[in-house]
Length: 151
Image (tube, rainbow, N blue to C red):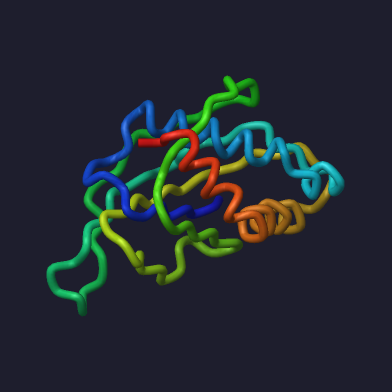
């Protein structure tokens, strides 16, 4: 699973259209990855496991508040080639669930995403390649979110 924080969002939870657009953009982004192709990692299913609106805490010592969650949304491989628009910053966590990330800009959306991939590699190696793709090509993903209007 991968945690993505999308900052500077509208002050509302993601709706079905937002989650669907998020999956479409991430799918397109991963489909364009030569690194994943060269290492025989093919994303097959992408599921938004959870997403929550995060508001700035009234008491800065308490940390940010997560306000609610959505229903799961799963998409199979064949997605339309639509785009998304989002916001400022993104965080990707490999082999941990969320760490202690605090958004720089509020409101923000916490998106927990599960990827099912086809590969002959061990799970940890395939997970690393996905994580590395997000980290090394973050500017491109951010650009795709903006160009394709997620919210």
